[in-house]
Amino acid sequence: MNIADGQYNENLVFAGAFPGSNPNVTVTFRPAAGDTGVWINGNGASNVIDLNGAKYITFDGRAGGTGSNRVMNVYSTNSGFSAARFIIDAVRDTFRFVNLY
Image (tube, rainbow, N blue to C red; front, side):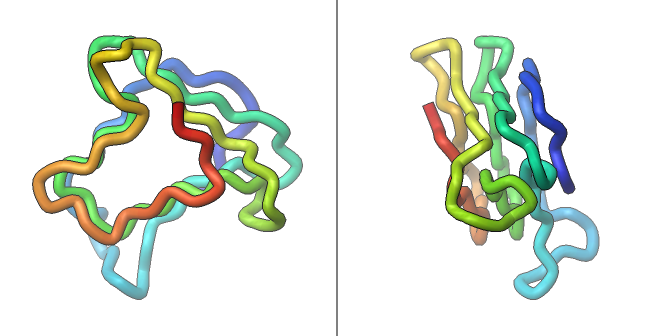
């Protein structure tokens, strides 16, 4: 799933596996080819990305999934919460080339 340039004020909660996903079929979120900056920050009242029992999810911070430039940034505006949290058997989830603040 490609994410367009911009700032997103969202809290993302992933509970359980996506239907049809498995070790060979994962769900990938990444900036679209040519993007120069994707910023995801929460509302400050919880973790920005909460992987609650989620499985087979990849966040790839490279535009178009190629190269080595980190274009995706995830940050929490509240020191009491995390940019990303893995809980309740969240396994086989990956963050690569993503700046987590």
